[in-house]
Length: 598
Image (cartoon, rainbow, N blue to C red; front, top):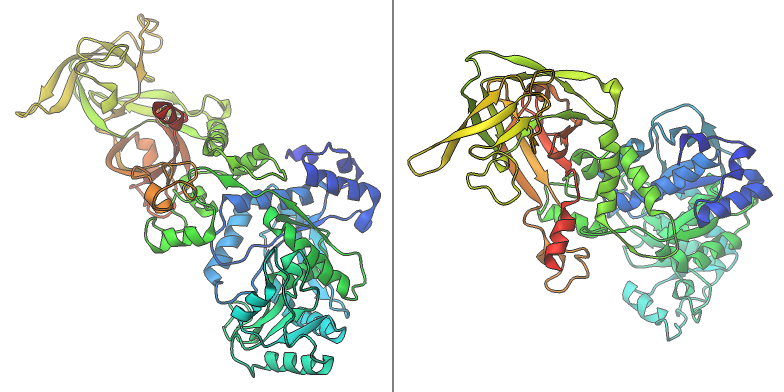
């Protein structure tokens, strides 16, 4: 979404619909529903790191708040302490801040003290600031009181069935469930048992609180769903204050209400939960207009996994080096690989928001980052597979500092000086002793143009006793440099190079797609582990880079000319010894690979 559409006021309601949810929100603003106010939220469970699928939801929810001058909350859906950790909370905060800062951060909410009714007030902060999260666990007291209200209204009861029996009594989609034998307990007994559950009198699994709805409902989620369960587990945010915890479906709609959310936007798998969302809110005596849930199709991305459970398995089995491994689809992995927030937001805009599930090609994500980095990344020369070239007619010890363009797409980026000397390195792939047809780069007797420098001619080769190539001997045309008499001479190939005496040695990591098939979960034979790409990481330890790259700061991005986009690693780079991660190649190499298999 462009900056011009950001802000508040009636003029924003006139923006043309971008997708069906945008159209719904725009109609509500125009009609004055919720007093024209828009409140959204992004509510991840802190049981893993966020991935590119979450980025779609982040951009949608914060984007709507940005579009309509509303507010958006980051809320930790922390109702299951056995699976949640502070590490995940911290990573979520960092990832969301990184993705939205400078774009949607003026539309974050500040928490204020609750009113006497227990309903929290919200206020917009129009200045840029670091996002701090809300927590569902902050509302445990209010949610517990709402549960007591349902019990006293005869709409919830304490059930002693085991988890296995609860599931068995629930029935199946084509077979009605049967009532729990504890369904008709008195209100007084249910209140007493629920208070004793909270006091810690019972062991895990001994009792649950269930809604009293309809065990024959065709929607299985309305068959007396569990609202509370016992968990004697310390909580990352509330410590040992609670031993009973609300289920997601119960806490989620009530958290939305408490925070004043107007549009609760979920992925399609929650569509069948919507009647329960509405039932809970409508069964309570809530004084203001209720939030409504809307669903959209989640992101499925080719050549990767989008399940936090399976991504955790990759981490635990050391298939990858961690959640932020640059091959992972996590936001932290993409950030470490060199993706920009702008490229991810643009990708989310390109894929759109629909009600239909589909598979998005990884090449679209790579296109988005190439398009962004092409405009903003400085160019540099790096040789990943070096072979030395000795220029026989260049003076020994002489050094020229040639002017190179930092970014041809951005004149304001200026220029840099690149050293040239008698010995240089070129890419091994830029030389063939016996050239193939239409190979126009360097071979004995052929000429190439050196980027920013001279026309170079290969005259001989140096080999060891076993015939291995050690170096090339060459001569240059001294008048072929820019401005020289032969500068305009037509040469079919231009190659990059690095001055040998000035070269910075560096490790470069070539990352590729983690799996060899588009849908590793659905592919036949052995599960997703059998489709891991053995070439997803190639580590090159003897790369040579132009000297300007020695001072690259962690996270700094470059285009290595003719090779691709690279980023200085944020963990392993040290002063004077950078480590670079390949973000993306200059072109989609997978198109060629796919054509080979056709």
